[in-house]
Image (cartoon, rainbow, N blue to C red; front, side, top):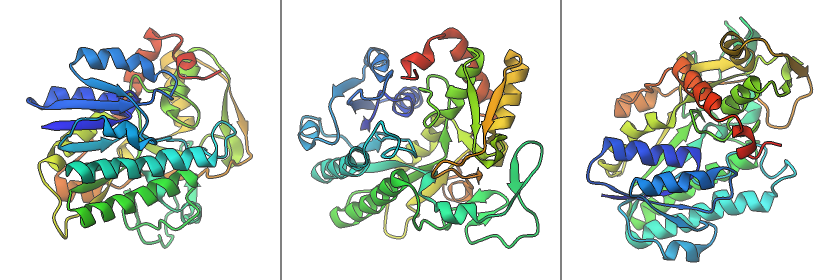
Length: 357
């Protein structure tokens, strides 16, 4: 089997490439990357050492995909993953749409041409910000929890958000481009008869992630704590009570192996949540507590002003993945945090490599 991974030299793409080769014999992995993400260039050599052919190209340019060999499956891990993309002053809205939507269309045309299956790594940020902020939360142990006794909206349970939760705008430009990509991928698959799976991932985290405040928050926070760099809680009273769950990308591999062995047929469940769930959820204040125990004290300031697209609570409910694919995340939250910490200790200039001033 031949697999192409777009964005292969990013954290998620490179982690998946290594894990797939370890888990599956007899596969050939190709990759394409434009190396726009600071730090991604350093993954090229190690991937080539594993026998992976890495093409320097940009999925926004259809001609760059024409030079790629035919494969059986494409895993699309190429995207600008920041919810602030297009409004952050570093990227334009056109840059974001070209990468996250036009790039997906070019990859789908490649799949159409070669009749390759397509796995889109999508995001929890396809869910409605307005609907999320209307859910009542309360404070408990320095984190937001669902307020008991409220009538929860469709798609929310004590386990988190499931796939039936609202995807009505506002989502952020980032979330909108990913939702549009999901719909186009499903339509391409139906129209041109190739299998498509949509994997909506929660916050991905682990060693080797390039850490920025808007991308890779766990790596950014732990690396900044060790170096005693300034840290700040933003919004929601400036206390750091906002909660997300995290997932190690290597935990996606058992599911991906099942997906590539199970071509989608009419009526298949095509879109699923993949997150760490309640057991792997933590607030920023809780993450600071973990860092304090691990590395000693450090002061974190607070700013109560909200940024656009900030949300107080988002935990992914992956029950559908469990019932459909018998999938559950394996790497625990403490293991993910400790893995990041050890990597940070070994790479004292990791934030600079990640493009953090």
